[in-house]
Length: 261
Image (cartoon, rainbow, N blue to C red; front, side, top):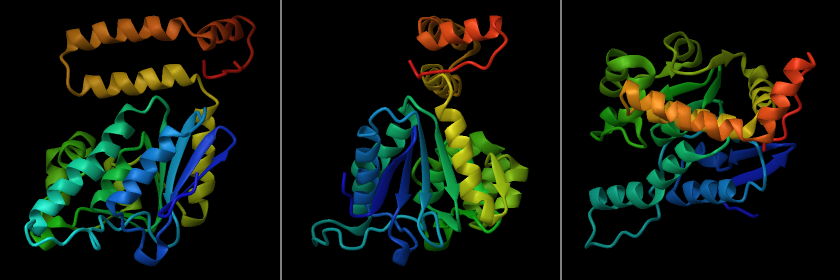
């Protein structure tokens, strides 16, 4: 598929999605999030997804420039409509994707870009990468699910710090906080993120997708419901060819060759 704001290409079993507006530090118009969604829908058997940004930034935030400036619609209304119809649908799609996601953060991951990066199962940042909730500086509020996501990732106190102070959280500090999976030297960012995506793509894809579902459900359910959900997902995973392969490989004392089915 041909896109205007992103590149999407298969590298083995990994779909690599690159935000591609480097002249705007990959600021994201609603069309970019729609294109990411289209690339995910057309992933054609890819068993993991890697998201990164071209140039000096991952994503510097939302870009509503050029949208309809009709006098009948206020800027606030335009922003709300863009979130509901443009940005939020992708965030939900990412949460429900049946394959694992890795993000590689080079430079700024700000505003909606911060939410996009942290929506991955594994967020890897370079040492110069940083996460920024800058809304307080312009009199707005976090979006893209940040108010839900940050408190669950780093707790109320640090989420409050990020949102109410609006300061950059660089890769090393983000890793210390547990906000991200790992911080690496800038030169090692893409090799590290790609190796992780390839490792996930070689795994039992159905089971990995069910794990994603279980983790998401556990954030919203009580203990008894979590136990019931685990039992249901265990039955689904146990019915796959990968589960049979895993058991046979264990008995034969060899590494399993998962096929994602």
